[in-house]
Amino acid sequence: MSTESRHILGVFEDAITNLRNDIRRMGDIAQVSLTNAVRGLVERNPDLCNRTIADDEEADMLEKKIDREGIEIMVKFSPVAGNLRRIVATMKV
Figure 1 (cartoon, rainbow, N blue to C red):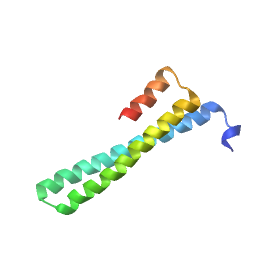
Figure 2: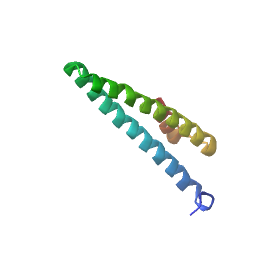
Figure 3: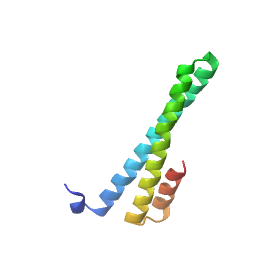
Figure 4: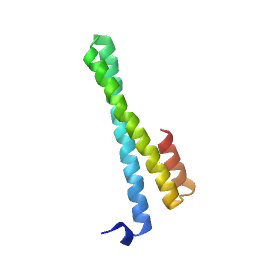
């Protein structure tokens, strides 16, 4: 089914779901990075420290993607109240 033939609320919910999935993925990356950083420091393991630095790049890219998606949702759907707060809060995370 094309985007044009779907109801606007369905398209909006899909956009919100994608935004939520991206923020979860970024959280997972942050959690693994923190674990690797602590282990790398405690064990003096440069490989874990380097992996943490590399994973930070992916988290930074996701942050930019989330901001871009959030702005696109606001421009395209003009959300208000709770939906707007949810989008802005997701972008701030």
